[in-house]
Length: 91
Image (cartoon, rainbow, N blue to C red; front, side, top):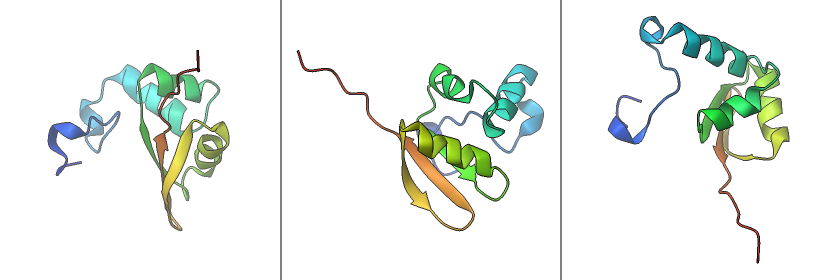
């Protein structure tokens, strides 16, 4: 995140003490796969999801099953998912 500059706008970062309480609560709901997690991704326009599979295996399963994101990286500890581009219906 440090090297990305303005290109990356993280939902949450390592500076937890500066995250507003409401956003922190939303983040916890996201990473634990609480009901409505996918709506939160849409609400906050989150296009890239990085999941620690060892700590949050349910979220990793939910994201891949959802079908909205493609897995672009995967190893023993983490997966990275990127939102598929929206398609426009043929007219």
